[in-house]
Amino acid sequence: QVQLVESGGGLVQAGGSLRLSCAASGSIFSISVMGWYRQAPGKQREMVAIITSSGSTNYADSVKGRFTISRDNAKNTVYLQMNSLKPEDTAVYYCNLHLPLFGKDYWGQGTQVTVSS
Image 1: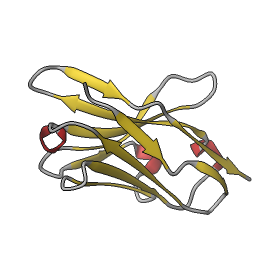
Image 2: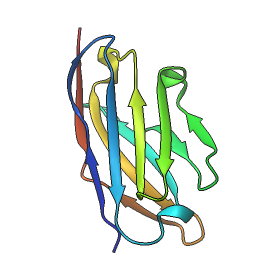
Image 3: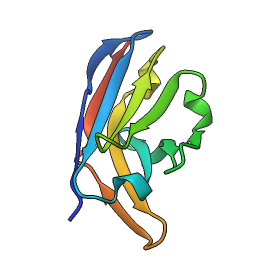
Image 4: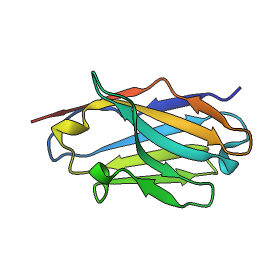
């Protein structure tokens, strides 16, 4: 069973930065597509950024140029560096591990990010 544990959320002023981390258990991390998603109150969960096993990345238009996703396969960890944060970035951020070969998804418990204006 895969477990994902997120950390790094919190309260920050607009224009500030936060770095989220997600540590995965198990031995499948290096072959997985890792992603960060977020869900604001009253809204659907949306993709923020994803990174493939080979390091290719994709970002939501709303965060391009401000957020950076990266991964460390030796530590089974994926990161989301968030800069120039805006109040509209306020949401619960979820880590996702996707296994394309098996069509399986695993989710973390979520971490709250609050950006004050």
